[in-house]
Length: 115
Length: 108
Image (cartoon, helix red, strand yellow):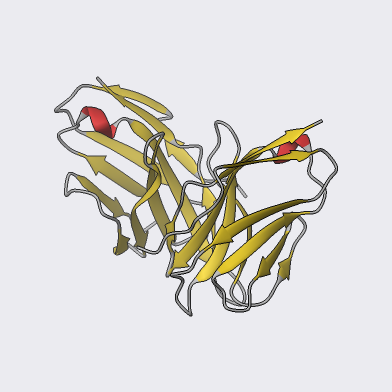
């Protein structure tokens, strides 16, 4: 099976612009989660989508939004970019494990730099 | 959100066992305990998970305290490729809450 893919891998934007990142999950996985990773804050959960519905949400401002399509592919959008939004954005797809729990498969991430 | 507490860093010698501790005193009764690791320039990678009983898989073992307030990830024979940041995580219904993790270095 192909792994989780994220596009683009690298992106440079200017303050005030908006950006859209894309994630294609592993075939058959219906849950997609997004995380932000920075040196100062570490890995922080943004949101999770399941069957085109947002199922969980982290503590990020409304400038961060996402959506999921019927083929489980997901996009996240950040509007009015700030310098502090510079980070590695990771997408993970998951399936429920036998006996309970989840195993999330992470993509390589999109490195966003805001100047 | 529930948080986990881990040592910032640990060192191990190659071919020796490594015990990585984690405190999760605020864990609820239904939260699974997951361990992930992140190698340099890669996304996190699933290692193991459990609820109440000790668990083994091809990568590691997970020992969970009886009161579930702590757990230990055991790498039975560390290799240089095990050098990574190891995260102990609550799985709150699919929402992974990462702590700062333990940076494991392995000496040849």
